[in-house]
Amino acid sequence: MSWLNAFRANVVKVVLELTRYLPNTLAMIFTFYAIFVFMFLGIKFVGDPTTAADNIRYVMVANSFWFLLMMGVSSMGWELSAEALRGTLEQLYMSTVPPYMILLFRMIATMLINTVLLALLITLSMLTTGQWLTVDVTTLVLVLPPTFLAVMGLGYAVAGLTIVYKQMNAVLQLLQFALMGIAFVPLTAVPLFELAPTAKGIDMIRQVMAAGTPLATFTALDWATLVGTGAFWFVLGLGVYLLFERRSMNRGLLGHY
Amino acid sequence: MSITGARHGSTDELLRVSGVGKSYTGRKGSTVKAVDAVSFSVTGGEVIGLLGPNGAGKTTTIKMVCGLITPDTGSVTVAGHDIRRERRAALRHISAVLEGNRNLYWRLSVRENLTYFAGNRGWSPATIRERSAVLVEQFGLADKVDQVVANLSRGMQQKLAIAVALLADTDVLLLDEPTLGLDVETGYEVRTLLADIARSGKTVVLSTHDMAVVEALCRRVVVIDKGRVVTDDEVANLKRLFRSRSFEVKLVAPLPGVMATELRTGFNVTDDSTSQAFTVELREGGDLYRLMDFLRAAGAEVESVEKADANFEHVFRSLVNGAAPSDDPRQVRVGGNHVVA
Image (cartoon, each protein chain N blue to C red):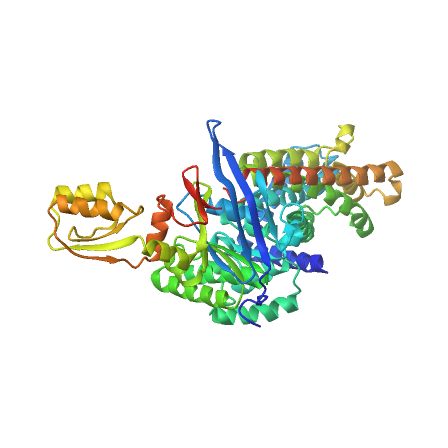
């Protein structure tokens, strides 16, 4: 019950901060929408007209999930860096609910809110292009949770690095290109890429939403890879976070900035 | 509900710090000992001051007590729970204000800050509403409850930070420099609040440079200097011990300039606003004779010699300058510092 209360408190905080920093949130959505519009214009005027519709739908999903990855992963880095700067990080560590759980609650809240923003971004993209994606709720409900596990694993890893090294701006900027690669590169081009965090989930969603592939087409191996990689990246990220947390406490770095 | 919801009257040991030490590696690879074998304990309902000059190791000690810094040596137990091995259980008994108004979310309101931090301790929204209503009223924050923290004055922010810690309703409250940076009026308000907390029976460990706060609130002080405990004693005892060694000397005429300089060089003069009247600390039994011999040789005529009233600021300055009273049977000299045996 006490963890449920903590979860509620963190969801409320994430929503409140989102509204208090509303211009920043809107600017972020606008940026990703603008990037999509440029890609769309590129496909329309420069690309092959015979595959333009497929490409647009592909890019629509990829761009939207790039946004989701960026918001989910980088937000942990920015947020913890701001917490250390403000002096609230140590106060969080005085909570009886363990900090890794507080982070998890925040990441879940962030992912839920970003899913709504993702829907908004996809709708805007569809209205702009006139190309419609297949929205299969069952597929999304089944595929998104394991995909989010990997996102949260990456979030933990970034958070762990941030509580030791604080200034992670350069790494976060590099990370956005790595995440772009994960969101955009098709697994058919680099099959091994399906082991990368979230790549399998995004690929499956892309197949359903952009190509209209039925859910039943996916094999047991597809599902096993999706769940396995999600769990692996989550556990790895959490491990990295706990390792750096211990290092930070040994070196007395929690309150430093 | 009282201001704190404190567990009144318990005299059990709530906090034990046993030989904790912490070293850091400097930029050139040198090892810096921030805290060296610090030990003290606090019983229920006690209000103790943790004092020391800047860089003495107070904040590192407090953060080790809170489990925010892992000690290299020693242990900390809170209500019988080891802060490292039973962290969650220990944290149920302890809350802290570590960086005052920096401990808050400035874009959230007073109510939202209280709700968020208490929520992270597992409190239900109903319980938080009930407890925070009493606290905001008592802290004079009731009409600011929906204002974002960024719009509050520094004093209000400081009060809110203390309210956040109190809302956790723990046995022990740690306050690191609660009056730092406040103007006189707000400092007084916060001091009054702290006095209310102290009177309610809450166990408080207070780190501060504000000697007025120490005199007003603390029965006992632990003085730390260069990472080690210099003294652990009751404020009244220390003042009495230092009073017995402090003398106000009045002369018929001022000492000539060169002799006034020699006086300051040869004796521990703690107040020499004029060279006709000064306060001097006489550490050894024979120091009074030596002072009289000096004054006779200087041709000074003594009008009066009286025992001085020692305020705690004077006691503190003397302690960190190495003038702990050598005839206190509880104190032994270790490595140039006095520690409680």
